[in-house]
Length: 430
Image 1: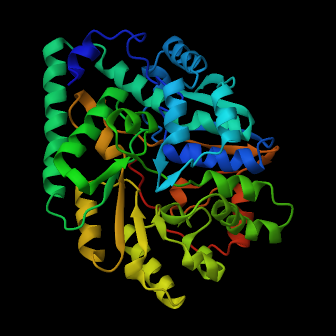
Image 2: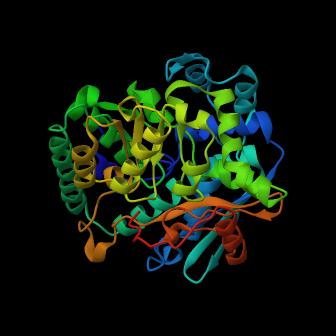
């Protein structure tokens, strides 16, 4: 097993680049890229990084030269022959050849496009503009770079034994969490921690700990490269990006209201089974479910993200019942800021009432809270989201207004179209 502390102490980026492969990304990103490739590859989309934890001034922690060096390194990456064979020939979600030959031909030729980087008020403004199918590929690696460079900046001054103790404490914390999860009946849990990980080596260690500690209760990882190396399932479905772009491209309020369901129409043409999981909260869960066509209730499940998980789970059960479906046959995936206590609470509430799945992210792969002076390694809430599509602003409302994205006039318009009422802001940890 890799001695992470020694590797960090002796670090040179050529040995440990932050992103070391085109597929050092989340599986859902490749699934979405294929749908985009088939239908909207020429739409011009801008993505941008936003640090929602504004008190952490990343531009004062992360060296600009090192940041550019890592981003430029990503632009040199190419899909390897072994990685292509893995994607072309492996079985994902019970389906062989999940990715079409046409998409794989494109991915084998893919190169990360240019980026723009500026400093403003202690933060980095990092943006990516170009064809949607290309810019979407930047989201996960860009976030991984920002998070790991922040970690490296904090760790830079630590001596060898300080690092050994730090990682020993962090490993103990992860293992104690795993020990607590073992008691949950019928547990199904996956690693969703790529985008805000402490570092690649640390995420890989966490996955190995989950494999050993949880056995068959551990379903796999969202990270395609780690899934390949550790021979576990690659896990993921889709994200808010799809409805945000579809909505931005709408030419009328009527088209805007229909945009989230058009996403699902396209998705079910491309995928099936456990990939048919709705993510209803981009413009408010309640209104989405109320106006969803009945065929949506026939999908496998739902991902409950920005709403309180207990409230969101109960709402999903009521909705399935109102549509004549048996919730016990449906899958509910919880993934927003999960930690062990939250997972245990959700499991106690819903076990036996729905099929349950958990996507454990930041607080698996980046829980160093209190282990560095002044909270220097505490996780931050940093995102990479769509800013515009074909020159039109992109908007996300969310069930938690703290996560809203977009110009205020457009947010108000979307609230009117999607009949979003008064919302209560909830704190965002990650």
